[in-house]
Image (cartoon, rainbow over all chains, first blue to last red; front, side):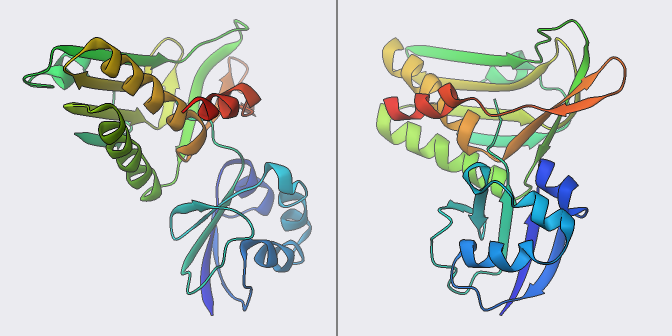
Length: 83
Length: 144
């Protein structure tokens, strides 16, 4: 399955780019994180603290253990600081 | 009933023209770039285009249903914003003041921890630092 992975804020800086297209059979965001973390030192650093990791699947905020299903866009980012 | 994300400043007076017709109470909240240390030049705000608009719209509709709001509006800026300048505004309109106050309070709590915005402080010396999320903002959501 082809997934567009997006990174924001500090995660984007650690990974080194804002998005990448990957091929993955991950069933959950947590599975996907394990695959992505192995891609580079920057990815590993970006995903070092899972407690401070937030995720959106097709632009809906979800838990790391939510099913990915036929997701096209998965975004990872730190806790949000709006307002 | 609208949510907008923009880099340009907004005009509160213009935003409220024709807002909440028929309401008995209108509450507005404006968030400004605050400098607690005296060493900040600006705030830079990043967001997730597409998801942000959808999330704000969802929060607005949820607040309208829950508090019986007659009207609501959210405007949130992104990009570089100087100290003292407005970052965002929320307006709610209801028949009575309590619903308008609570609707605005609810929207702010959701917006702070669930809308995909990230703030970065830009110092007078040009150095940058991401603003850390605070636990009390997360706790605030449990009130609702």
